[in-house]
Structure formats: structure tokens, C-alpha cells
Length: 428
Image (cartoon, rainbow, N blue to C red; front, top):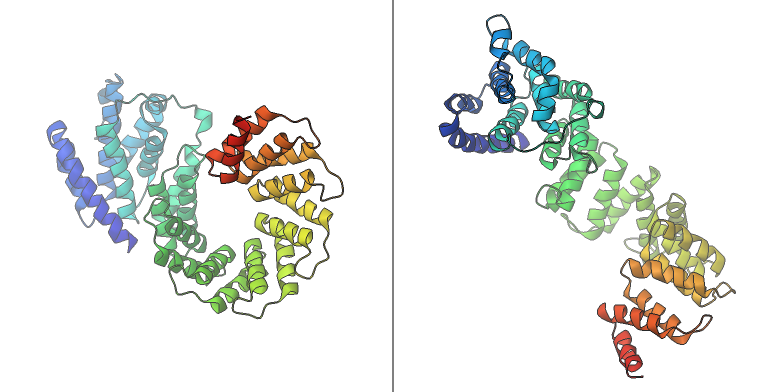
């Protein structure tokens, strides 16, 4: 179980910290041992925090603390909270925001219902204190941090074992664009929520293990989490579970079960599931081929904004496939929708359509524009086409300098035709 793994990791961290603190601070070396006990009281954890906060404040020349605050008249929790409240500005400048929040959270706990998870957080604080407290830190703007919201969330997650709160903490630490992105912490809270059958947490963990995000890639575990979430009605998990059956990842390939789960996800408006159903019907995978059903599935998916379906629908209309009449303008419409979502093949095809006048109107400038969009994204064939356009000078003035540039870029990308033409042009 995950909690056993976390407990093992905590013990390894405690052993490392004991070695680190033995020579630097015997008080910590002795008290860190308490964290290895089966039952760790909240008072023990808060006592460790109290020593760290006092130590930090003394380093900031707040020596009068010994006179103002006496442990005789307050509980350990009250002492820590008093120090945090009265010396908030000093501490905000001395502690990284992530550590600052953890200290507040643990100090504010009233009971301890998730010992292993909280010990893990205390170890983060202790490790920082002994390894990084001398680092220069950016000054925090009070308006940028609403730590009370996170503290309340933490208390619900730890004291009440609230699965929704645990999941939200996982999301908080998993926000890649935020300053609090910590994959290990997000994994911890998602795991704790998943143990309580939280479907969203199970789905996210499926993604973690499938993509190897913060953990080793593991298709079997990904499949297991997707299945648990899907059986609770999670539509995206059902789609991903279907994908794994479809591709034989973490489970033997099974088109029948894949279609059943894709059908389920499609009924819940998962556009990607509709797209894959289109492939199943078009290619007859586990079912009889049905071009009408394939077209309808692609169309529904495209209308919901799924970019691969939009691109596929564009090609369907352009070529008149799947029982549809050839309609270039409709194909153009769907290619443009896909291009709006930066689909590289759509960029290329739009360049081809306009430069060759497939709509009945040839527009070289538009062709160049779209080929350049594809080339910027690394499409080697688009670079070759740009070389052809500037070399031939059809619809625009011939420009050998530009032609050589684009042929050179295509040649660098491994296009043999571009290398041959480039040699011929340089020999002129």
C-alpha cells in the first residue's frame, strides 16, 4: 500500500537527518528519533516546529523572544502559533513560501488522524532548516498568499480524512504553472484520496503512472487506477481504459472491451472517445466496417472541438471519403478549425490547398503563410514546398535566396530531394 511506501521513505529520511544533525544540533538528533515511533503525537511534531521557528527568529536577531514568550504558560501549539502570528513579517522573509505554509498547517492541527502524511511534511521543514536556511529568498507579498485557505484544506484532509480536501491539495501541488508545484506532494495527496475511492484522484494517478509523471511509468498500475475510476462513472477514465484495451497497454488487446468503454465515454460526451469509435468503424476493428457510423462519430467529435477529428473530417470532405461528396470548401473549413488548435498537418494541408488552387482560387501568399506555420513547427515537407514555391516563381517573383534557404532547412531535416535540388542551385 502507498502508506507503507511513505512510511519506509520517511524512515530513510529520518536516518539521513539524524546523521546530519548529530554534530550540528543534538536536540534535533534526539527528538527526530521520536518520528520513527508507531504513534507520533501532535505535540511532538509541534515541539520540533517550535524549535525551528525560534531558531529562525533568533537568526533574525529576535532575541527578546525568550522574555516575551514562556513555555510555562502556553501549550506548544499556542507557542508556535503565537510566534507565527506576532513575527509573521520576519518569518515570511526567512522561510520559503512552501515551508511557511507547512509550518502554519502543522501548527494549526488539533488532532492527528494521518500521522504518516504529517510526519512527511515535518521532515520537509526539518530538511530545509538544516540544508537550505541560509539561501537567499524572495520577499513574499502578503497579497500573493492566502495561506488560511490552504490551512483549512490541510486540516480537513488530515483531521477529518476528507477525500475531497486531499484531492484538492493534490491539485494545489500539481499546478505546473504555480510556484507550489511539487510532484511528490501532489502524488501523496492523490494517493491518500484514491485510497478512499475518490474517482478523480484515481484518474489522475492513472495519468501519472501511464505517462511516468513523478513516478516510474507503469501501465499495469495506470490500468488499475483507470478501471477503478471508470467503474465509478468517471468518463475520461473510461476513455483511457478503453485506449489501453484498444492498444494492448497493461492488458491484452481487446477491441470488444475497448469499444464497450469507448461507447460508455462517448455517451458522456468525451470527444476523444467518439473519434476512436470513428477509427473502429472505419477500419472494422472488432465490428463490421461501417463508413456512415465512422463519419458520424468523427463529425460529433469534431463539433465538440477534438482537433484530430477536425483534421480527419477536413480530409474526408476534401477527398470525398466515407460516403461523402467531395466538398473542398467544407474540407477547408475543418482544416482551419484544426489549424486554430495548432495542428501541424492542418497547417501543411492548408498551404497545399491554397498554393495549388484546390478551392478554385489560387492564393500563393496564403499558401506560403500556412507552409511557414508548418515549417516553424518542424515539418520538413513544408520547408521543401516553400523551396519549390520560391524556386519556381509561380504566382510570385522567383527568389533564389529564399529558395536556397528553405531547401537548406529541408535538407538539414533529412529530405533527399531538397539536398539534390540545393546542389543543382549552388552549381548555377
